[in-house]
Image: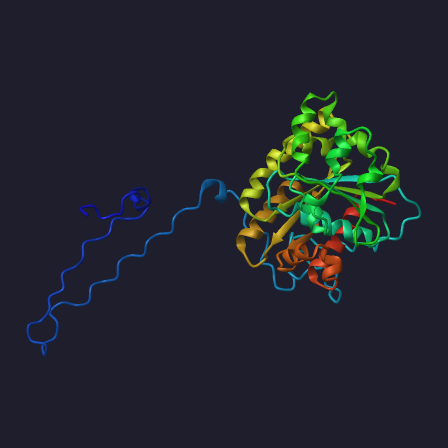
Length: 360
């Protein structure tokens, strides 16, 4: 080939300095003689490529956190005043006391239009952790993929009735659809692919944004907390969930693309507050899939704390292989591995959620 680059790589090579011509090295005719020329100098190191502007604007890690500072929030033997992964002192949250009565429920939507950020995992495990405190919890699977149902051992394709029937058929009652789970005090309103049709059918309905709220009104007195696992979109189903909720928990994967989508979500929340549900508030933003060993994860978490301050939960959910295992067995981490760090992190999250929006 006449060109010094492979086809299609010219734009990449353009970022690097042109290679210097090779220096001629003469070989002595007599091998006993020393070479006539010295060893050529090493080429200058290639300069590192600059980070994109939008990445460079992100703040540096808050501080040089030590291994002790990055210890899990749930460390039972360490002092509670240590600095957590968010760069703030960890609060000493009291243990939730058993409720004196049931209801009315706090309705909380797990919402983020980006997929794969831990919404379903958080919904299941936060619900189970709150149920451990003696509160009645209803978990609503509001995603046509039915991931929350699968995560609690329910096969969506085997369902005769789902949340879709409850939304679209006036003769179906919640008692016919809600089912208990293996976890005490935790019930499930399951979903399957039928729910995807609801988004199309609701367009023609009067007051379509209030359909889920109408369904939940009769059962709010029966529970202390209702958690809604939203679909990874900002469509009509998600707007229904936000209209029916008192609060929002935003699971946020500690990586840059998830951070960019947060601005779109807060804009949607502001519109719902203004036009449909003035009671709606952000309960907190939850860092998920956090790996404190990486600079990038710490930078993203710091940027979120700078933007939202105390709205960011002190609890951070770290990466672990336990979560995929719990999906296979169909139960939450609090029962599958009750003594694990991941289970303790969700119990700490439950304390924070209950402290911010008391239930029962």
